[in-house]
Length: 73
Image (cartoon, rainbow, N blue to C red):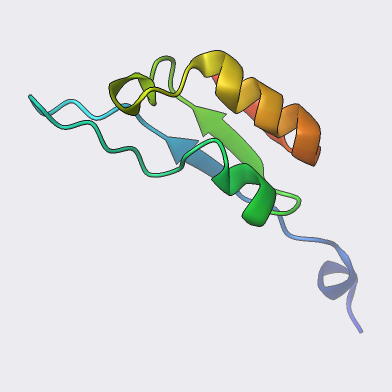
């Protein structure tokens, strides 16, 4: 086997805030951290979940609980 096959591949996944008027959905809820994206970095835009009641702190808590990376920008 070659070296690159033995190296875990990771992605950086971005979760932007919706910019459309009266649109409150977001691509990833805080609870989804636990269910997916094992080993990948997740970048969440500041206040992305505000429209449906999820705070930046909710995303950070889930990231810490599931040992995944989470930043807001």
